[in-house]
Amino acid sequence: MSFENLGLNDHILKAVEKMGFTEPTPIQKKVIPEIMNSNKDIVGLAQTGTGKTAAFGLPMIQLMDFYSTHTQGVVICPTRELCIQISGDFKEFTRYIKPAKIVSVYGGASIENQIRQVKRGAHIIVATPGRLLDLIKRNVVKIAEVSFVVLDEADEMLNMGFSEDLDAILSKTPKDKRTMLFSATMPRAVTKISSKYMNESVEITAGKKNSVAQNITHNNYIVLEKERYPALKRIIDYDPDIYGLIFCRTRNETRQVSEKLMKDGYNAEALHGELSQAQRDNVMQRFRNKSLQLLVATDVAARGLDVNDISHVINYNFPDEAETYTHRSGRTARAGKSGISIVLMNTRERWKMGAVENKAGIKFTYAKVPSGYAICEKQLYAMVKKLVAVDINHEEVGKFLDPVYETLADLSKEELIQRVISIEFNRFLDYYKGAKDINASSGASNKPGAEKKSGGKRFSKNKTGAYKDKGPRKEYGSRKDNGFDKNNGPRKNGDTRSFFINVGQLDNIQKGAITRLLCDQTGISNAQIGKIEILREFSFFEIDNHVADTVLKSMKHAKLDGRDVMVQLAQRRKPRPGAKTKNGRKARIKSNGFKEGLKTAKKR
Image 1 (cartoon, rainbow, N blue to C red):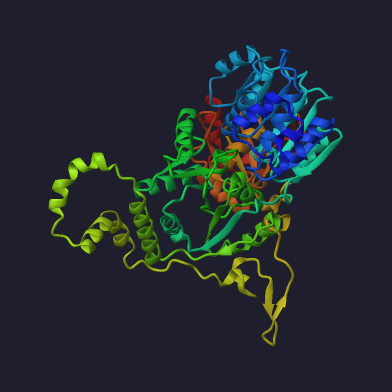
Image 2 (cartoon, one colour):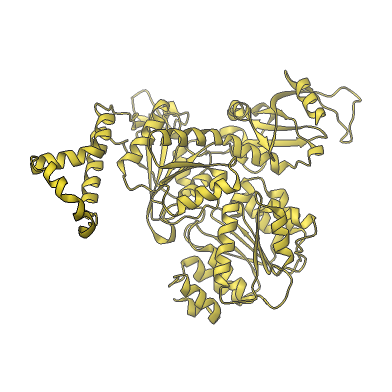
């Protein structure tokens, strides 16, 4: 099937041809005719990099009236990078439709410039939720007459805490609009949005639901915690042509890993939430044009990242959720190409692997961290290939060669080769000389009874010495595992710790902002955050006990909307009899630094 068979008009077909598209992808073959030939809402499930933007973008453009002046379509996505990418694609789709006006609005850029662009006319607005809601409240963006609303990477937006913003935005749209929801995974929260805001809808799936692309190889390496960074270096060194994305949990870890890599001579940079938009754009431009070989990023910074030809995705730590792994690994093997997704894990993280395999429909292959000898061998052969393949400008180089020949005349062919190779190769020989094996035991990942130390023991010995199956391990991320339900928060107070933060209603703070701050700053998942209570001058939030210490440590120098915030542990007491607030209750707070925090809040 070709794009001509999908019923698209000549202007769009000409643009598609100009972009180099020859044959529609599976999701495009299914979604485009459905949007063109019916009035149903769409729930599209497909891995990242499968052409979802064209799947909803091309038919939207065909069905719009670009001679009308009002906004007819809104595309909402989780990140600035994805927003810029989608708006760029839409401009390419409408290259030969002169009246079409596409505007992107997102945080971190001048709101005044974006307001001017919207006021000049915007048939389609591509936006991040926070900035779009801001412009709606300012009465700049009017979406009361839109015909199409697209929620792209819907699961990512919910994980980032945008649920309240999406509710507020969608409530302003007309009931007779067409809503299209696209997601790589379909957690319960996404299903809830589809049932709440979509009318008669049809679900279209390309590939297995909640799965990753089939052309990705999934490898896991098991090392001791102290060997995590050395293992990363060996994996990078073993593939001289690596063009990779390294995921870390927190901004601080991202900064530390990238700084170590740069100090050790690697072509690496960091991408995290503390960078300005200009810095982010510069880093991304260098990574896209491959002048940067390794990008170290947090999940929040890399959400929606669309870069072709990434050869490796490296998980510096095992992600907390299967959905997170699905999104991370989806950054490689795009547009039908193959790729490698790697997980570095310590001996205590083995129990997570089985749940990710089950939920994502994949199978990890245990791999050994390369030895020093193997790395040197690989680097040597790569160097020789470059020597053979190098282009020689005989006319220009020849002017300088006579004295070179004279200097090298006494060297044999073997000596000359050894010296040329050693110029670059000596540093690998020196570094890996006598390098030890840093692999931890792999036996626990595939032998009966070996899960004993991981906390997920499935087999036990009976009196005869035979192994007895005790049933499946605890489900990763379930209530039984960490005291949290992914959609409903903590199971009981005993499983959580309460925290104080010195921002509240006076700061115009919403729960989603605190959720995003916690996920970005600490690397925890949305599922590990419990109840959030916003009061007048300060707020409280609950965190899963297992990550409470991580949160307290990571939030020491946190910033929210450019200002410093203070986070402390807080312990609530039962309210005194008769003490009431507007909610009928008044909570007393006990905290070592609470008085100090309250003074800080009142000074603002």
